[in-house]
Length: 498
Image (tube, rainbow, N blue to C red; front, side, top):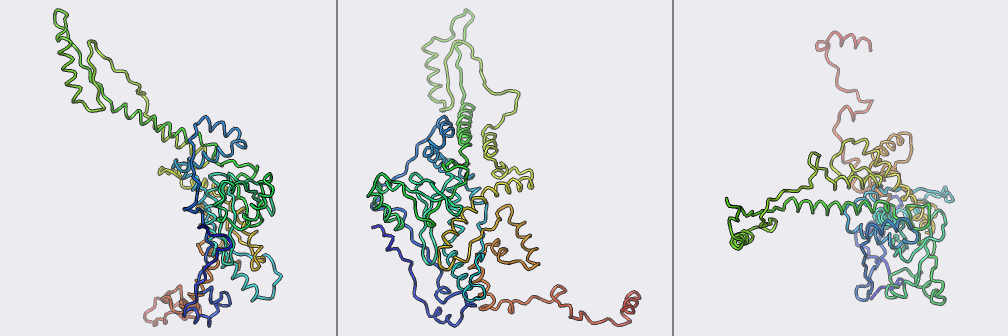
């Protein structure tokens, strides 16, 4: 039986004895004993009731000519284009790698910044709210959930999301794009309108959505002509790659025909390989001196049948009274170009990414790095929009209205240079938390690790490095002075100058 939204609760395990003892420590006031003992639990999302579900997913294979027609009129053929890219995502390793290449470019490293100073001077209040905000975001597993949104965006252009929010975090539920549209925008973020006629067909799935859907479905049933109802802000939002227009247009719709070309070339290459492995043996009837057949037809036919019975499948035979000439379609005198490899390179060029990223024939590491930086900037623009949507939700939490999540502009190709920049700015007193974030440390993880190493394990005092010129202080006198008899003349002159 499906679990109703109001029945979904976050399990709270009882505190162990060790956790009770830990009440004597307050980790500098950052964490309560309960939060020190247990990590945040995610909201439980049920995607399908396996016992009652009547929904199945199928995709039709479109021809290259159909794809050309759909791209020419994308707004009218929105559903067909979406089905085409999802089908290729499942079947084409090239398209699958391309989508994940862009979705995985950015690190999704983030920090928490204070944007309101209404509690200025009340450090305990700020510390408590910061701790709760860090706890909320860590429980949401922001990087992992954002990667799912990015994958959907770079595959289909738009990802429609609704959110389950608990005191310990938030969980994103991706909606069926067939029943979603963008009709408005608020706080620089697109809002979602949902077609509630969806539940006329899939009424068994209504308990699998937040309580808001049940309320608005009842509203729709009172007036079935108004089936498109906007979902509540900020818990529902849409993230889009191509923000210039409202209708969805898959970012890589322009290369769908090139992907079909690769499959066509593969088929042609397979046919050619089969023909290259095929052989024909001609059994010729000879003539005697009088111009008569050397064998009668029945005897020659018997010999030919005996030969035919022992030949392998890729070797054919023929009985002929005349000579046969070989006819070949090979491009003699020219290099044997690999059309499949050429079409794959053309695919990456058409997508705007370097083919060196997906092949082993790297010729210029710097050119590859610069190309990756350009690709990363495209992903970064989508990441910023996700940050806006998350901050809309965060601002509605009582503890998070004074803070905001800030994604850092670093990824696969810019991480090292960005870390070097942060290292140099830290020397001038700028914040250190962005550097920790680029090293994979979320705010809650960094705070907990620092407390564990300094307060519990006392590692700074336990891990003492061996003394060397790098660890000695300036007040250390260094090694003892040498006797006058063991020092050179140059050394004596240097001593006299001191």
